[in-house]
Image (cartoon, rainbow, N blue to C red):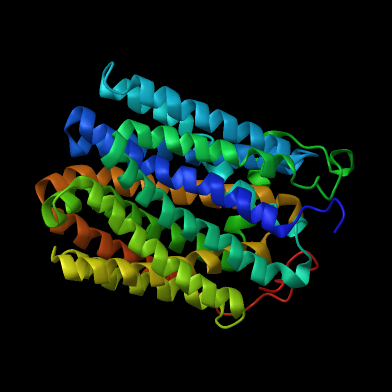
Amino acid sequence: MGKRYALWGYVAGAAAARTGDEMSGPALLLAGLAVTGSASAASSLLAGLMISAAIGGPVFGVVLDRSPRPGRLLARALIGYAAMLLVVLAALGHGPVADTVLIAVCAGLLGPALSGGWTSQLPGVVARESLPRANALDAMTFNLASLAGPALAGIVAGLAGASAGVIVAVALICLALPSALALPPARTPAQERPAASVATDLAAGLRAITGNRPLIRATVTSVVSCAGQGMVIACTPLIGQRSLGSADRGALLLSLTAASALAANAVLARHPRLLRPDTVIWCSTLVLAAAFLLAATGRPALLVTAMLIAGIGEGPQLTALFAVRHREAPSRLRGQVFTTGASLKITGFAIGAATAGPLAARSLPGALLTAAALQLLAALCAACYHPTRRRASGRGPDRPAA
C-alpha cells in the first residue's frame, strides 16, 4: 500500500482516542461524586462537557472540510481536548461547582473531533467497495471504547481514586496522535474548492441534513435516542450504589452494554448488507426501550440482562447511522455532516444526563422509565419522517451504497 494510510492504523487511532473519551465521562462522574458528594453536581459536570458540542461540532466540521491536512487539525483537537480535561480535574474541588462546569463546557467544544471528525475521514482511507465493512469496523471502535472506557474508569477509581481515571483517559487520547497525523490529505485541494464564508458553509451543511429526508430522519431519531442513553449512563453511579454495592460497579455495568454492542457489530462487519440501515435505526430504539424498562426493576440479574439487550440496540444503531451519513452526505460537506450529527447527538446525551441527575435523586426507577419513554419517542420520530419514496437523485456519484 506504500504510504497509503492503512485501515488498521485508522482503527487503532480511533479506538485509542474514543476509549479515552469514553473513559473520561464516567471518570469525571466518579470524581465529581467523590469530591462533592452530590449526584446532581456530578451529572452537571458531565453535561457541561457535552452540551457545548452543539456549537463546536458544526464549526469544527467547516474547518475540517476546508483543511488540506485534516489529520493535523484532528491532532491539534486531541491535544486541546486532553489539556482541558486536565484543567477540569485541577479545578474540581477548588472552587464553585459552576466554575468547574464552565471549564468543562469549554472542553466540550472539541468533543465532536473524536467522533464525527474521525469517521468523516473514512472514505479517504478505504476504497468505495470496502466502505460498508470499514464502516462496521469504525463503529466497533466506539463499542470497544464503550467496553474498555467505563471498565477502566471503574477499575482505576477503585485502585487509585477517581482522579487517576481522568489522567489515564488523557493518556489514551494522546496515544491517538500518531494515527491522526498519518491521515491522508484531503482529496480536493483547498485552492480548488469554491470560496465561501464560514456562515455560508454552516448554512450549506445544515441544508444538507435538513433537506435530505433519510438524513434528517436518522439524525432526529438518533439524537432523541441518545438523550435516553445519556439518562441511563448518568444514573449508573446510583444504580451501582443501590443495587450492586458501590458506585464504581455501576460504571462496570456499561461494559456489558459495550460488549454486547461489539458482538452485534462484529456480525454486521462480516455481513454488512444483512439489514437496511434505515430500518435498523428505528428498530434499535424499541430494543433500547425494552432494555431500560428491565433496568428500572433494580434487580441485579435483570440489570445485567437489560445492559446486554441495550448493546444489541446501541451497536447496530451506530453502524446504521454511519452508513446513512456516508450514503447521503455530499463529499464536499462530509466532515460537517458528520461533526454536526455528532454534536447534536452529544448535546442530546448532555440534556439527558443533566435531566437524569435531579430526577434520579428523587426516583431512580422514574429516571430509567423516562429514558425508556424517550426511546419510544425516538421510534415515533422515525415513523413521522419515514420517506414515502426515494428521490431519483438520492444516490449520486459521491453517495456510495451502504
